[in-house]
Image 1 (cartoon, rainbow over the protein chains, first blue to last red):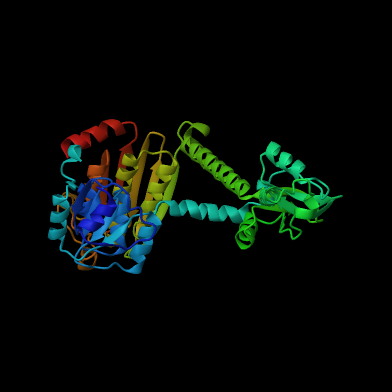
Image 2: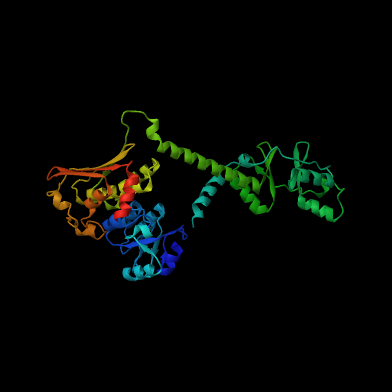
Length: 119
Length: 317
């Protein structure tokens, strides 16, 4: 699934500059615990989270997360956006809750981080 | 879009490259006495669309295929270049950067710019095609140099001979300084890539380093050191601090056990998964701690078993 389509499905806005909307992402995970992201998220996954501090981007960097979606209309501080741009990790904000967002993406065919072989 | 960084690189280059590096030379010229039908042959044979006009060693005009077509339409093929040329010649200096030429092309809408040296002598000619070729060549060159640099970095252990060679990266991690949290781990990850590590391996080390770095920030009294020892066949990660120490290591290793304060939990950390996560990412983990003395965490990652480990991970998770 292209990032462009993900943005459409979650009705989000892209917050980072120079974002490659043709980037392919095949699986996603939702988490507010960064340690969870570090332990179960798979590389090149989309991260949905309610946290907006720069540590989210750091975590994404370490875990090779492809892009981050902030749920419930939360907007990250400028330092988070700056770090994401530096690391080349796209940031997207959308108004829906985590549950709604996951449901929309799952319905649209997004894979999960539970079944690696199928992604 | 993805093309943006490339454009930035090109933008850099048009300032760096000098016109003399991209211009064509020697220059094909004509004199004011050259007849238009002779000019037609010169343009055709050399497959060019315009030439500077010189008299003696002086640049006196420029004539292009457009002027030739006009003369053809009017049946004036026997007239001379001197009658049909443009006398107002826009030129550039050989020592100027390419960006000057780009500006002049834009301003005047000309197809070619005669290039003069500092004494006003005609030394070359520049078309937008020359600039494109020059830029492509420079980008190719830069790419090649980057490849060589990367190759050298990834073969550093072959080039340096000793019984045991390693690269040691030391970072001091201050306690409770969240602004910089993750910087050391980021640098370790970057160094591993630089040394030719596969993404999966670099990721394992980076995740463990990051958890260890967060632990030093969250739990220590005075911060600690995060050390990555990079060997040809393994990476040893050390996190050392001088207290407070862990009273019960077995308890600390329980999933969900945490002594992290609320402020760190609100950032998504301190859920009691850190040590387990480090263990999961590594091939070997040793944790020593004494209350009042400090904690020493040693983690090993073996490079050669990477392929096997990758298969193992994907079949069980």
